[in-house]
Image 1 (cartoon, one colour):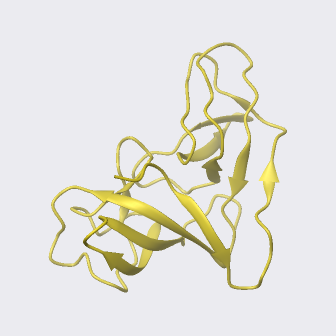
Image 2 (cartoon, rainbow, N blue to C red):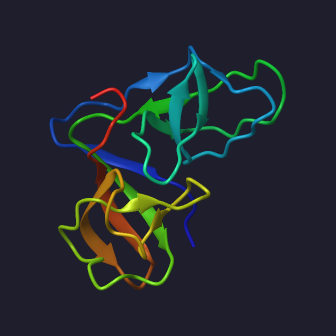
Length: 139
């Protein structure tokens, strides 16, 4: 199964915006493709219903003052993401409030209200969905 959010394209033809000026929260690790937010000037994992700042593009080991590199979640950006959980009846194309999974590397198909992600299409064979982040930290 694929792991993490994978940038696909932007509706306006823009290249992804890479950010390298933030440090990871001390003692926290991160994985490529993981949804993140910025808290107190540091990168940290985004929770299931948090506004998303972006997605890590490289693994980060736990430590002190670890540098990060992430793609900013912007208007018009599309991502492919794996989904986990038993899909709720409302987990269909057009659902607009799917939550992030606890690991931040997928969406939770069982919870389709209160989340930051909207779904365009679902690939049940690969257990992935084409998504946009509608609740962005820097919108």
